[in-house]
Length: 261
Length: 332
Ligand SMILES: Nc1ncnc2c1ncn2[C@@H]1O[C@H](COP(=O)(O)OP(=O)(O)OP(=O)(O)O)[C@@H](O)[C@H]1O
Ligand SMILES: [Mg+2]
Image (cartoon, rainbow over all chains, first blue to last red; front, side, top):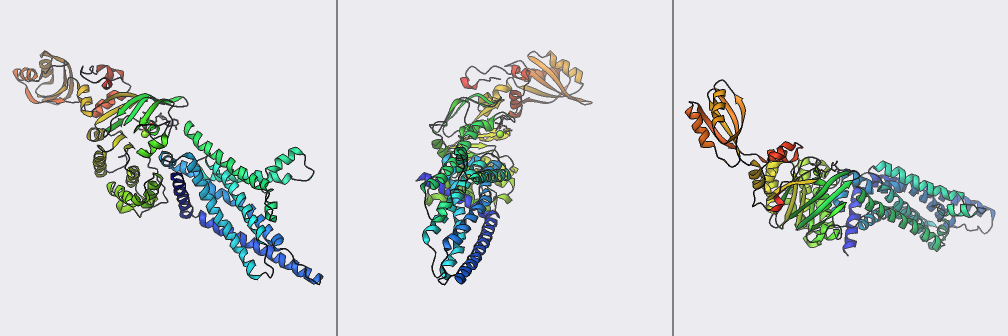
C-alpha cells in the first residue's frame, strides 16, 4: 500500500516535470505530426492499390486494411519511438543528480526500487498516452471503411508499440543513472537503442547459430508477428526481459553509486 | 536518540570522517562545528542514510541506520547543505510532494504543509516557482520540507547559510522552539549560533572529534586563567616594570602604546587573581589605571585553537577540571 502510494507520488512528480518543460509538448506535437504523415501516406497508397485492383478484377478483391495500413503505420511509429524515448528518459536520474534532489529522494522513506519504478512508470505512462494519440488518428478508418478492419491485429499492434517503447524506456532509464548530464544520457540511450535495432538487420534465413543469437537482440525483429495479430509468447517475453534487465541495471546502478559516492 | 559509535568514512584515499563517536539525547540541540572539509556534511549524510559508512555504527531514533534505513528515514527530517528543490515546482506543490513521499496521510497533508510553511515563513510564496526564489527563501523551503512530517530527529546542515540577519535570528528561534520535542543536530561555522541555540557542541576537525561540551563549559575551560587587559596612563616602560614586579604574573604582552597611554595583556599564573595587586603596583608608581578587565576567550578563539594545526595552542590549554565528564576531554 505504502509502496504503491510512494510510486504514484513519484509518477505524478515526473509528469509534472514533463509538462512544466517544453519536452512534453514538443514530443506530443512531433509524434502526432509524424503519425499523421505516416497514416495519410499509407492510406493514399492503400486507396491507389485498391482502385487499381478494382479496375482489374470484376469482383474488386478486397485488400486488407490491417496489412496495408495498420501494420506499416505501427512499424514506423516503433522506429519513431526509438528517437523519442531518449527525451523521456534523459532527465529521470541525470537531472536529480545534477540538482542534488536525489538526496531528497534518497533520504525520504522510499526504497531505491520504488524510485526506479516510479520513474519508469511515469515515462511509460506518458508514452502510453502517445500511443493512444497515434491510435486515435487511425480511428477515422472505422468511420469510413465499408468492411472495417479486424480488431485483433490492431490491438496486438498497439501492444507491440507499447512493449517496444517500454523496453527502450527501461534502457534509457538505466543510462540516465550513469551521468548527471541530460544530453549525455539522451545520446547514450539513443546509441544503445540504435545498436540493438541494427543487430536485427543481420536476420536472414541462412544465418548460422551465432548470427541467430545476435539477431535475437534486434529490438524490432520481435514486432512482426504481433503486427500480424499473432501473440507469440517468445516475443512478449523478449520485451519483458529487456524491460526487466533495464530496470535491474538501473536499480543496481542507483544502489552502487551510493556505496561509491 | 542518536548514538554514533566509531564512525569512519573513506572516499577512496581521503578519510572524511575518522572514528567519530557521540550521543544526542532526546530533545537536545547539538551543534556540529568544524572548519570547511571537517566532515560535518559527510557525518550527517551517514546519519540520514544517504551514505553508507565505511566502519562504525549509527543508531537514530532507536533504529540502526544501516540495517533499517527506512525506519530511520521516516523519523528524520533533513536539510542538506544545498536545499534539494525542484525549480519547476511551486513552493506549495513541492511541499505537497514531500508530504506524500514522507507518508503524511492524505487528510492531514494540507494542514501539515500549511503549518510547516507558516513556521518557516514561506506561506506568502506558496504560489511562487521555486526557481524564482531568492537563496534565503530556498533555504527556508528546505527547512519547511524537513519539518513537514513532524519528525523526531532533525538534521540540519548549515540551516542559516545565506539568510539575512533578521532571518538568522528567526531561524534560530525556530530551531530553539523545535528542541524539546525534537532532537536536533545542526552544523554551522557561525559560532554565535552555537552559543545561542545549542545545548551542546561537538567540534570536529579533519574527521575527528576534538572537543565536546556545552558552549559555556568550553569557553570556561579553555579560558583557563583568564588573561587581563590592562590600560595604563603613563610611560609604557615604567608600567611594564611595575607589572613584572607583581607576583603571580606569568606573562606580559604589550598591546598598544600611545604617547601617554599604553595597554598590556597580562596572563596570571593559573588559578591566581592578581587584579588587586596590579592596581596597587601601578598606582604606587604614580601611573594611572584606566582599565582592568578580564578578556575571556570567545568561542571563535576556542574554535580556532582547537581546529588550527597550531600545536602550541593545544598544549597551552589547561587540563580539564577533575569533575568534568570523561567525554568532555579535549583530545586535540
Ligand atoms: N563525494 C566525495 N568524494 C570524495 N571526497 C569527498 C566527497 N564528499 C566529501 N569529500 C571530502 O570529504 C571531506 C569532508 O567533507 P564534508 O563535506 O563532510 O565537509 P564539511 O565539514 O561539510 O565542510 P563544509 O564546512 O565546507 O561544508 C573533504 O575533504 C571532502 O573533500
Ligand atoms: Mg558541509
